[in-house]
Length: 235
Length: 235
DNA sequence: CGTGCAATTGACGCCGGTCAAATGAGGTGG
DNA sequence: CCACCTCATTTGACCGGCGTCAATTGCACG
Image (cartoon, rainbow over all chains, first blue to last red; front, side):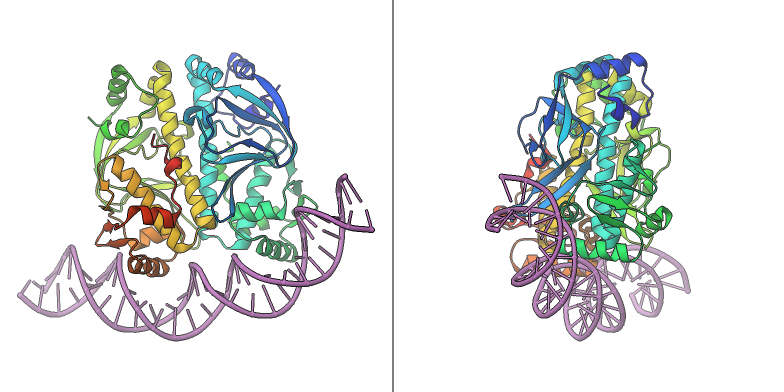
């Protein structure tokens, strides 16, 4: 089922089988997109939403002086731009990090869902707000945490999110992004990101190489990063 | 009308008079809160939402090492914690910046609104997502902008938002926050914030003193800050 | 085998943080 | 009405984390 991972990560409010089926039926069609291709361009009028079913996607904003801030990293099961339904456009862009598979939901179909089921409305709404909570935690990271802790914190977050869809365990996970992506997500330079990764590796906290994160002692890493997952609303 | 400023700042989707009235009737009661008092505490179960009708409020998170990151500044007409309706708790705290007046909406009343009116649902949902868009723009600010530009950008944002509710014009606005608040919002230290304010003043871009922002040339300020208001969805 | 991009490392510089102290303004109690 | 306290603002001196610049290495791919 296309929406399987999404529903797996959103346990509340509880849905009836009819509601689950209705959500799944709202898919208009599916698409594949190649790595590094732009999926949604900033400020373009939108009429559908994107659910990520396979691969990784990132949301980002380019600045005048050629810098890029990554605003979010999305994993399978994430409703990447559900917020385009009430907003009708996005103020940032979305691109495929890896080769991906996506499912498209016409805004009109979502509106019908919200008309029929307040329960489903609440769940979809909630989903967009958990994304916002993650945005805020990143604000805290970039605002007050040191470079090494920012990276460590992000890794803890990704691990927790990936674990829920069966793509991570306590010892690590595959992370198909570059150090440049990681730098743009944490507000650091690639050079300094590299140095901090080396330090984290030397300290035995984290080993990120060849697109894979290896964690030797998750508790110690979480402790170092001051990671408290309550902002993820994992429930 | 309690919801007057809120409706003034959310023009779409268009509401019928009945919908406006229904929203207004969802207010359970009003309260005053003194400056610096906490209104919502992190992770406490919530059963109602807070609409700010008078004064300023901020959302923030404290870190273990005693630092504070301000996540949002709210002005009259803002639905400060509407996101608590789908989330049932907040992962951050909310406090009164000044003496404030607030109106409280029980979650149950909001649920009834969403059951009755998809239109109203979309508007409320949209409101929470505009807050999220502002969070993301702050992420860009802290992630890639220099100290002076961060401050200038925030001032442009606040001016634009305040103008819409008649509390600012092109020449400036009252801003009842301290330099410490400003520092915590921009991810800077109070000392450096003070230095940057002096520089902005010297450069003739911005004069923030005695709780008032004076702008001599808005276009020049916006240009310096690379301020593009599209993320505010002002319409 | 050349091309291009990611990863890595060293040298150096600067933006913004830290520390410390002075000034000023508002509030409160004697 | 003044003494005193508290907190915001301001400034100077110094420091360090992270950025900048530049070069090298490694790897994938055509």
